[in-house]
Image (cartoon, rainbow, N blue to C red; front, side, top):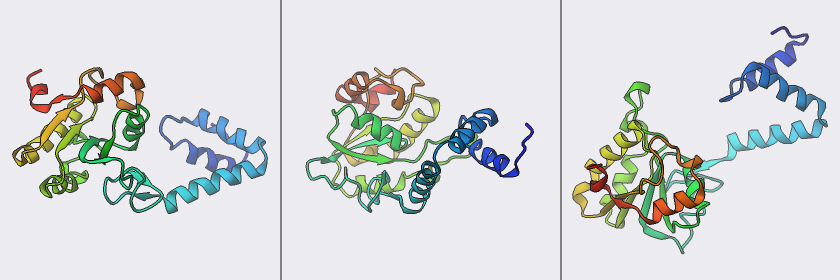
Length: 205
């Protein structure tokens, strides 16, 4: 791709590094911004810089937040005895949209994947185990996608906490195997949360 401007080329190269954005799509987006009022690009730049510099991760659940303790964890109306374990913030948003879950979350920040070099120590697993050890948790709900990596992560955590006398469940299989939670419709996801099953039962499926 030949560029008449090095500045334009640099902008396209940076945008094309985003997931799912190729060089042609990046060029289209950059030209769109170039043809819009200058203020629009400035607002976008400021928003991205503020996101990168000021965004925080909740010290309790690891969800993305504007403050040290996210709004969900600080909400006294939530049931802190039930924790839903998810991969990332997109899953929190998907489950919250169902309005069916009133407990708290624990964001792992990924899934165990030996092929990609992701082990248990790369994820927020230790802090979850510490919550269980504290004795304040009565139920853990696994809400990871039904993939090999998701099942491996579920089983690893299960083995770490199975002897602490708490209820360990998983969302019902209304979510198809291999599906990501963020793409599930709200009704199906909501029912999967409400009709969750003991995790031990899922091992027999």
